[in-house]
Amino acid sequence: KSTWVRYQKMKAFVLFLREVESTHQPAIDAMVSAKAHGLDAEMFEGYTPSRADEYIKRENLQPYFPGPKLYKIKWNKGGVRGCMISHLEMWKKCVELDETVVILEHDSIVVSDSYKTPFDELLHLDKHRFVEPDPDLGQEPSIQKLEHYRKGQQQLQGTYGYVIKPKTAERLIRGAYEEGLTAADMFVKDLYCNIQVVTPRAVKVNNQESLTSNRNFYI
Image 1 (cartoon, rainbow, N blue to C red):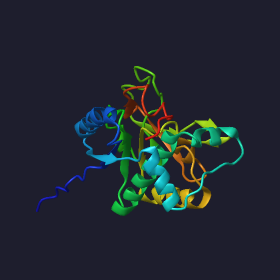
Image 2 (image 1 turned 180 degrees about the vertical axis):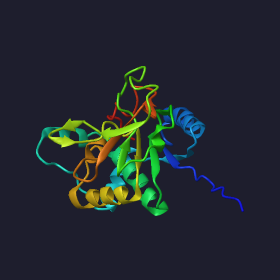
Image 3 (image 1 turned 90 degrees about the vertical axis):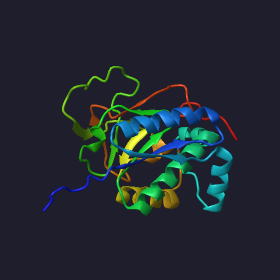
Image 4 (image 1 turned 180 degrees about the horizontal axis):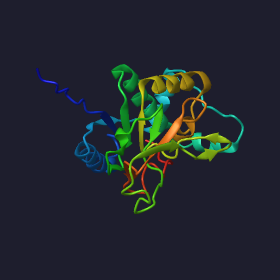
């Protein structure tokens, strides 16, 4: 009797914008890199600012303005709203599938299998953003708390590479509807989930000059 259990590949979503041609080829490259590291990767069509604004209105979502001006400044950028709604939709997909998924953006490149390391609720995949080579390269994969704080909250450092469990996705969705929206990487915070990071990195940003840094476009 065979004892082989079919290893189910983890799904990965690669966020791109159909209307923004410059996201297409990088997203394909991201998908190819994800597949090379054993992920079942597919493209995920994100929201442009105008479609995000329609979604926000339709779903009766509100912005989260706790006080510091930074929240308002960020939320006024169309690309920030588009990014937040795109991640919200990927979280909904994660819950619908009831599977742990990897979330990537069009300018991400998967560089190792360390995303497979067991974690608690949400796992960030790049501890040393923009640092080359990875200082932890060659080490055994290990998990630690993500030490990244803004305005007194532990928050995600960029949303270009993380692993999320369905229960965590559910909690984030509830937060979006109950407490309001902000920039995706400020929205994901310790109030909602335990944020950990894996070393060595599993993902890096392929391009620092991207939609991830320029959020002022509006289409």
